[in-house]
Structures are given as structure tokens and as C-alpha cells.
Amino acid sequence: QVQLVESGGGLVQAGDSLRLSCAASGRTFSGYAMGWFRQAPGKEREFVAAEIWSGGTIYYADSVKGRFTISRDSAKNTVFLQMNSLTPEDTAVYYCAARGGRGGLTIRSAYDYWGQGTQVTVSS
Image (cartoon, rainbow, N blue to C red; front, side, top):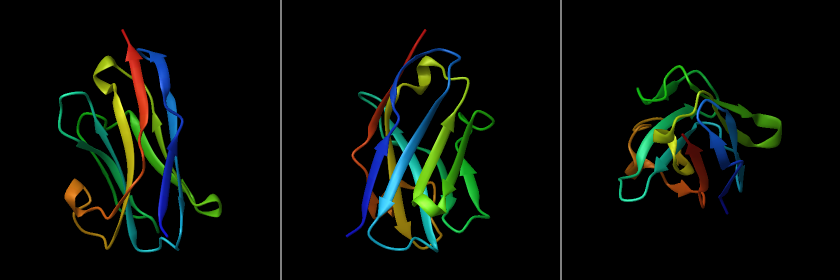
């Protein structure tokens, strides 16, 4: 079955960087959309970044554009989120998600599978 397992979260200072990983298993993901979402306490889960597994189509939320980069290592079935220039506003639980098909990449309800989340905390 499909499983997504996030890792790499932690406590960092403003301006620091983190690289989140999402280990995907259970099937081949060609044609799937892979997304990162985040949810802060008391807030709605919001879109961060997404990419088609096979490459070529990438979306970023305006709040992270230029700072975050989504990528993958197909040999390891792993999706990454490189986060640079972190600010306290980036503090949230970050979730990896996957869906069949290529549409609705920025919409959380469009995704079929979710990881357990990893906490990112950025101190000022």
C-alpha cells in the first residue's frame, strides 16, 4: 500500500535552513503529483509546494517562492523540500502528500495520500 513518511523537521533559528524528506513507497509514482502542505496551530492546512513526480511542472505558494525548493530522488523514491531563509511564520507541521493525476496540485482535498507530518519550528 502507499505510504509517505516525512522526516527532517526540527528547531532552527530565523535565517537557517532545513531539508525535509518524504519517503514514498507502495507503488510507482510516475504521473503522480507530489505536494507539501503545512499547518500551524489554529490555522488551516495550506499549500506550500508541489511537483509532478516525472518532473516538468512545479508550483510554489507565494509565501515560499524563492526560498523553498521541491525536488526528488527517484532512485530512493524520496521527495525533498529544501527550506532556506526560514522565518517564524514558517513554523508549522509539514505534510507530504500524493495524488494520482496532475490536476489540483495546490488543493489539499485533491490529494489521496498523506504522511504523518514533521514539525518545523523557527525561533526569532
